[in-house]
Image (cartoon, rainbow, N blue to C red; front, top):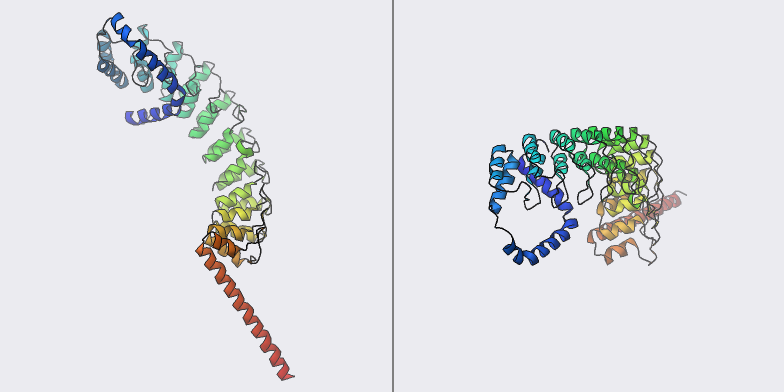
Length: 434
């Protein structure tokens, strides 16, 4: 963010604030309604202001641009230093976010500005300074008594925002002022989660060196390691495993980091997890093993690596489906070929009696259907409703599947007839010779 232009910075900040908007929208609307009720009598009881909304906007724009002289001139005209823009930002918020240290000093030395003033999202200038990756303004605000414990509307401390922005200097300053390394926001993410999510390895190391829990303060949600796997942060995975992260810890839905990796095509991350002792036969809440999810995702490299490390080809989930069944759900023919090559049962049935051939025919997945037929799948097998694969294709209107199945049946019938003919000719020749 330090290298982004002002427009991009502002858009990124607005997007961040929008996440927590629902948490404060009711409060803002309630306050606005109360203000509307009391506006009539207050208009007659207070002096008329000497400035306009346009003047306040000029002040905020000058603070954003760091124009000290213009800010002084506007304040001399009677514009309050703590007036807020439509987002609740004061001039101090703008100066802190943009890193205008000289202007920030001027605003806070005047005595009219509270160092811990909050915008509509309960963010202080310290929050905005950390978000804007400005180490000097962060240091100054901490020296002026800014609180590092104040929470935004979504439960984030300044350290959360410093970690999310990759602001190593601000994060170090906060920790030196004894900021807690493991506060959790409303999503149970710690600063370590945000640093991992952003790929800020130096911030990750800083947090761990200062006592951050490598498992994310045991919040019960996704761990930093699982998050690193989900976003494909290989250096982060390697660093967290090196610092003692548990590769077999379960997160949401009972899934481990290996389950999450199996859903991707990240072979290198999978190798790191396996080397760290990740279990290949562990089951999630639906009793699916990593091989099930890898077959569903369709990564040939990941499927192959899991099989070579002992994953069960006939493991069953809560619906008694095997990894081969999963490969048919998204027409992953390469995964199906590997599973069959290593000995997966082509006619294994799930709890409703459906084989992989039934599922492929039902969904019209012709690539994996061809693989199953070439591997000798039995077309005569029936489900618990007495349906063959051809019946299923007809019911679901899968003309492509139906054509393949009928073509295979016809070819099989022709081969059988040819075999009978060859047998007859052989017997007849033997009879003549005799």
